[in-house]
Length: 299
Image (cartoon, one colour):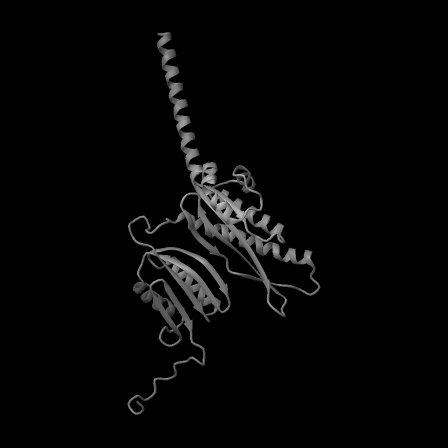
């Protein structure tokens, strides 16, 4: 009786141990499938910018459930220097995959410029996303932010002004990338509906009108997949719009949306929707179509 009880207990312990091992294996597999490594392509003249941006993005990825692997560790394991360029890193993607499993390789780029004869510094972050197995996924450009530079502002002063904007952009960039990664990749949305990508350009609309239109396209248009490659330089806004609906449907919905934000698509702006391309351009006073006039008398 004692032997039977002991055997039963041993069997239960072995069963429990096996269950734990399988659970850990499943967790390990899931983690490996969600691995992320972030590389900076920021010029060497901005070392603290590179570190701050990648640190913030790594933290955001980690909070979203991704396993973030240190880039220096990866480069050391694949035998590459710390300043390895993108093409060199991508050429070693199979080695990176052997190290972190199926995951994503993200390159982050920082750019800044000062308009001539002004005290305005513009800055933005952008990213290129690749998988460790299938190559390019998407790119994303954050809208540029303008920083007003006061007189007699030295480098320390400028860094202090730049830091909060950089932190906000890095957090926003990581959040947008996470949304892109959650979307299905490839030529369909998982339900055999083909995904189309439209290059969208809005010209001479004010910021509020652009934001309202983008909000409608993202939150109310059926078939929406993602908005990527956002680039804003007044008076233009450009982005890529991923959707499963046709150009004909988008044309209909955009006409309704323009009227909803107070723009007459027949009189105030030119709307063009073609395969892979959307343009919305507000007429200025020179381009005004003028009144209909008396076509019976003057024709």
